Length: 284
Image 1 (cartoon, rainbow, N blue to C red):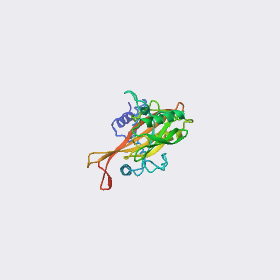
Image 2: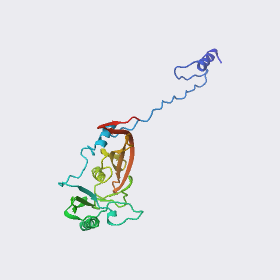
Image 3: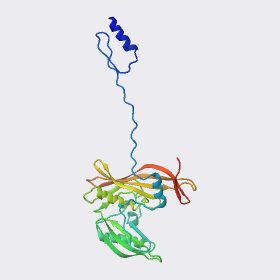
Image 4: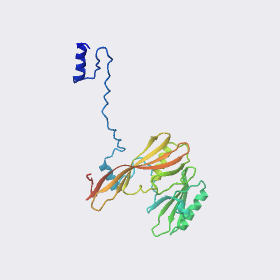
């Protein structure tokens, strides 16, 4: 080995290189340094699904001043001074259920059958309700009844048209699972949004302590999805902090068959309290 080669070998092995270079001895082949791995990056946090802050959300669930966002579908109020109850007839209203059967709304496309069900429910109630009005649209039949009582109450009994939606196989006590079959065509984002917002009206989420923060369609591959972002107040111990849970309540529809499924996912939660007219977040 020549003197120049020995000197180059010494520099490659003993020197502290500031850059990656290939060093060779004499006429031998050069070596290649191993690539330097890029520093790992943390996954990006999921974007917050609503613009409202936690404090603004807490103010909604404590005050009940805005249970749904602008443009959300709601039944128009009736010109009735007393109590008004709106509900869909269910299988449990018409016959006793076995332990394995779940409650679901019934449907028919026969107006006479729907009227007979309404009359059956009225006859079996503790106080009979007189039929005072009937109506129908492409989604349901409606029977307006006034309960015979010192303080008359108005009831809007509804029966889904099967040609609109069949809720057979649904478990109304579950937060997820089968949600029926949407039979209206075409099945598009608008139709799914209308059904999702309508069904919300008959859930526990349509009560004090709950607020719909957003109602929006979502991309879901070959299916359609509509998501309601809902905040719910869970009371804590007296004098302590409460918990507010924000969850996604999502209906998915197969655009071919119309099969519906419901899923519920917790997104985040925080603690808050109300006292002396003041609403504030709790630390931690």
